[in-house]
Image (cartoon, rainbow, N blue to C red; front, side):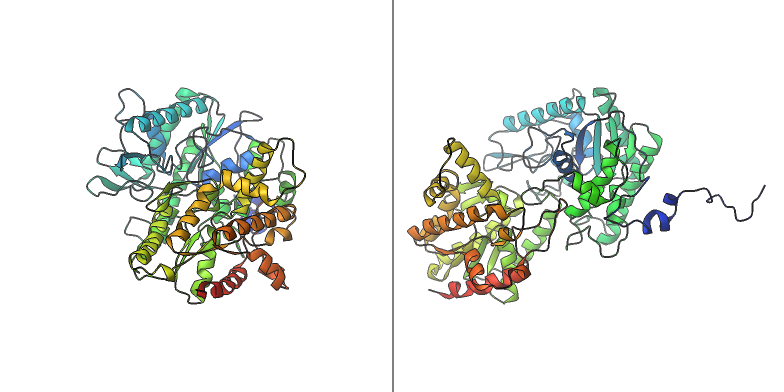
Length: 590
């Protein structure tokens, strides 16, 4: 019997309507109720994560929240359960089950690149970027990764698989690569490598095959599919990147939905929707409109918390954050290989400018920000950021007499340094070294090095020290920073004018870093003492800033991370403009 005003939607709940289910939710502040229907078999599951770069966020959050997360013991460059790095497609994951299978069409010796007697693993381009000494060593390392994978799967209750791309590259033997050869490692050859865009049928078939392989090792395993919200950096289709990205993500989302709707071992978690649903004053993407912010990651993972914590109920994000402290990594970065495509394109543009310049910058992100300020002042220069601060602090480089050093953090870092080296060598060849000035912050990286110094101090003086003096810092430099300092000394001895710039002084303005202030300033004084002995110029930006600037709060970075901590490492654009203007007189001095 038909009732007045009745429709099939009349008994649907609030979550079924856009206004009450989405518009009325304060995005970023409230948890969406009834967002998923995932039910786990264990109260405290052991979780593994694999997939695109967004999968690293999952592992970092779980580690920070003291959940049972399977962390690879072989992979140190990324937060990952497996020693594969980023795998953007199901086929990339599926191949690893074949790596040592008898009768498999995948040859364990495939997908390698040899240069200068070093062997590089193109199935894992970010693993051991320095290369292996022999093909046998590379193959042994693959076998170890395969064995660890199988061992990890046996102890995994829940596998979170983040689907990232449909676009891929394969060779003429049918081997698929996590990134196009030549971007991170290897050399591109169009007679060997071809572009491939996975279809709906292929993706479904690969996920079914992955499920069968997983269950042959661990019959009780549950699989949660997610789709990475990070857009494509570039497309090899003939479509505009906006159209290609939407098509790729829509296809992955459709496949994930179909698998979770029709196969009990699959569930779907809507991280993609949480990041891409429209929102005024969006907090979820960085200024490049591609990198996901820490706040957005935390918002997604607060929803994921309702999956793994059976007793949790929807609360405001503020309440959840207060209960779970999430420690941010030192650089607040996630390794994401496809972003290197963008940097490569910028390099190609800069390589057209071969004119020698007198000013060269190199270092970490501070030098990149300083470069932008110098550009605004129309100060000709080359270089900028070469590696992350952690790359310099953790010695992700090889010493080299001919090139001073070789960055090992990524292929992009090596190309960035190569461009800088050309400019420096041109001065040497033209006998114009007297005109060459280098600005760097190599050896600073206090967000990393102060922690390393504290560890060194505890190990060197287990009984403790009454007072930390310049001597302790100099001894630490000799033990831990010899390579970094020797690079600058070689450049100085070659004839370049080297100006070393301290980190900013902003640790003193935030409660989470204020206690480090005295130690950081003492570090600066010690570095200044060392360089004064060798005739290098040291600009203590921190003390100069403190003496001259009366409104320091207006120079602070406005970035705040998901755990409530602030970016005390950097300043804002106003600070780097101030720094550029302070350095100009030093640059002009002869």
